[in-house]
Amino acid sequence: PTGAKIYCTAITEALILRKYPKLLDGPTSIVTLAADQPTVVDLGGTGELLTVTAIDAGHCPGSVGFLFEGTCGRIYHTGDFRREDWCAPVGDDGKSANIPECLTRAPLDLLLLDNTYCNPAYRFPSRAAAQAAVVSLIVDRYPDREVVLGLDSLGKEPLVAAVAAATGEPVRCTKERFDAAEAARDASCRADEEVSVMADDDNDDDGLGLGLRGRTTKYSAAPSDGTMAFDATAKGRVWAFPKQRVTRDMLTARAANSGRKVLGILPTGWAAAGARGLP
Image 1 (cartoon, rainbow, N blue to C red):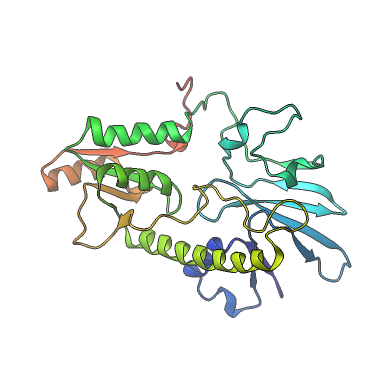
Image 2: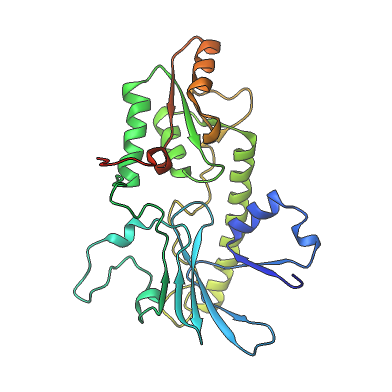
């Protein structure tokens, strides 16, 4: 529609425009939001103003949920999110120290919650425990095998970084994933510079106790530089491929071509779809 706007983080903007470079040739525009910084949005022609706060979703680079405040009340839409750090012990005031103050300063009128795995069958370990288990498989249990990680086009960057650090070599990936990571890093650096200038001008305080720098988890941050490589000269025995390509047939073919055993890992809850009584 004419005048349509997309509200997102700087990282998401970079990834969108990388995939759809002609998007802004039309009437669509993109408005970038910094985490934890309230932004007033004019709802065009209605005379109504809406305050929108992007809150780090801890899901994948650039991911945020949105807190809406206005005549609609206080509405928090999490989107896909995973904030394990919000599950810290609650203090005497009944609040977790890790939950942003903008969410706790007053009751919510509506919570739109991600419930993807809201079933007792899905009892997953923490991401830290899962990451340690994957690294141990690669480094301790199968130190001589080629390893294939099945990943989505975005996400699991901290796992990739941990594997690269443990093996001492970058994880070899597709050019698509490498270029996306580079675009995310560039966007993140530019956004940090802009926020730094704003913080210097405003003494890093927006009057609500939120600060302009925001709070970003490593899961929503841009991927670390040097953790991935795609060129033919890259060394390393760990590869990251789109998870749809990681099948038994694919692993068997790679083993036959390379003459070495291959370990395939699908680090996703979807691999346990339909499971019961997971440990």
